[in-house]
Each structure stands twice: as C-alpha cells, then as structure tokens.
Image 1 (cartoon, one colour):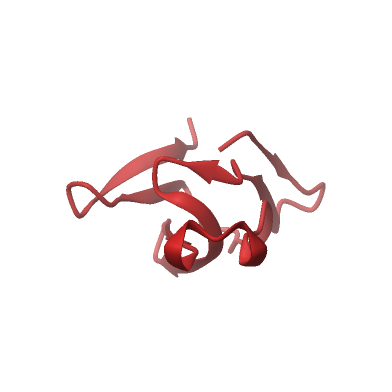
Image 2 (cartoon, rainbow, N blue to C red):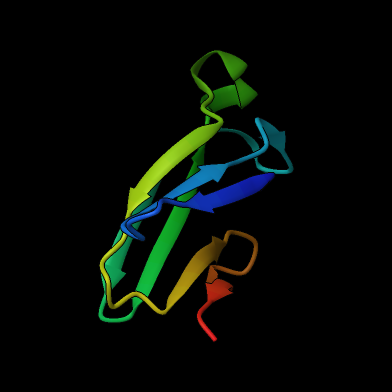
Length: 85
C-alpha cells in the first residue's frame, strides 16, 4: 500500500495500493465489517496482467470500526493493518 486517507466524515477510507507488488497487480478487493473489525482481502489480476489492475479503492466504514485487518496470503491469516488508539 502506498497511502491511505480517511474522508472528513470518517465514513470512507481511500486506499492507494501498489499497482504491482509481490502478489502481482491488484484487480479488486473484498471488504467485510464484523462488529468492530473491517476485514480486507486483495485479489490479484490473472497472469499478472496490468490491463485489469486498479490502484485506488474506496471502502465504506461503519462508525464502530476500531481496526482494519488485511489477509496475509502466505499464511492464510489476518494481520492488523490499522487500529484506533
């Protein structure tokens, strides 16, 4: 991930991801919130194809979200990306 921003109303997170990384080019993501946690899984393009790649993503976030977790593909486990203090 290159950068992220939270909108003024705190309801949307905008992610700027690397177009090409160790998983290849990112084509989409899946975001699902359960209780106070937002789970995000990135999906790469097929055959490392830059044609269908995306770099910017906007994700709606509920007000009770305290942490954002990203899927670690190598281990199949979630890891904390961001957490409120």
